[in-house]
Image (cartoon, rainbow, N blue to C red; front, side, top):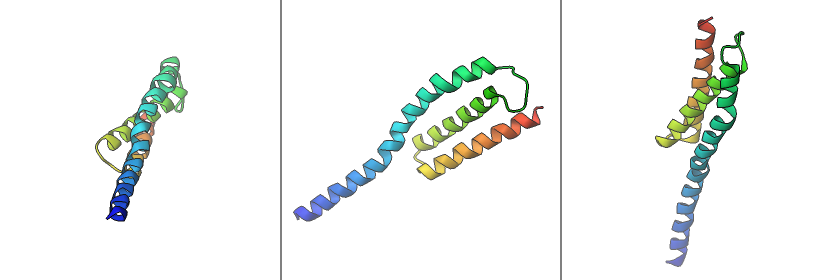
Length: 99
């Protein structure tokens, strides 16, 4: 019985460990957006050119928010990462169409 209990506890820990880094990454993403991306967006707002730092930072910020939303809604890491990629690329398509 002890072996089955240990195996069960090990399985629970493994499942929790897989979620923990993803959940912790959400706080790091918020800090990255607040401390790195938002200042770049503010500094280069209105800069001319199709690929200025503000446009890149804004697209990346939007992608990271999509990733966070996916994780919070229970999507897997791969699914959330795909949301980030899709959002990031869509931001550039919109940016280029606005020119």
